[in-house]
Image (cartoon, rainbow, N blue to C red):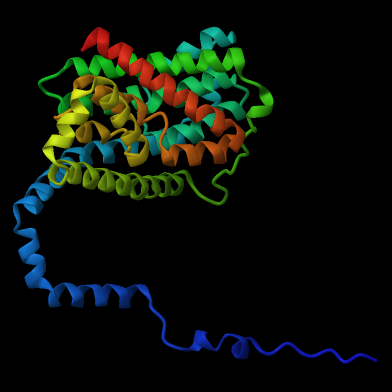
Length: 334
């Protein structure tokens, strides 16, 4: 009879677990000690003109955008928790061609960022709403709601036409994508989203969980966006920015791609766009139209909600239509 060897105990297989390891309090302590030890060089680096310019732009963007971000997160969580998805299904027309613009306009009265619009659109599809209308709402809600438009007006006090241009361009693209899906979309491209309800939680608990999640998530992207804008303003040579800004085609594409990469929450992106003063209003409009519709985090969320096949087709089509809509709207209104 064969003899089987016994597996060694877990403590013998992983002796390194019993030794010294790094944890969060220790890492924070080491970081503080390092900052204190290097306070001289750090103070000298922060005192340079480049760093002073960087800090000025960074703080200005964050301080201006933060109140709108907080208000948008609170309202978005309230809608997600307290407004039943069946409400939207009853409010939309039965004909898909009419449901698309109605769903697009519904985004104007429902504050929320793009992080909240994806699960809401998934709930609409799950409740039987035509996907074309859900797509129109998905794209319009984070771009034309009152919080975002108010933030845009505050960020562009000398260019009030930017508010109308953002509203018109975003709604135009949202409806165009909805109608495009109605005509060319296939059911096998769209994976029906599954429902994961807040079992075991009260509405108040679900509300504050949503607020904490969205605030940390959106706030992190706001900080990254402010850092990128400050770096672009303080470090990039002025000749490079002028060269990019002086080319109408390249400036629009550059800021559209920047919006995808930065992935800034729509309640805060207007302040980042306003800081890019070297670029034309049309190029900055492309930044504001593209960002809330398709960026890196949205692509991941859309793939997780509706399936990778949907996201791989939806993302490039949305990007192309958003850039085109921004250029057309900018030519007419700016």
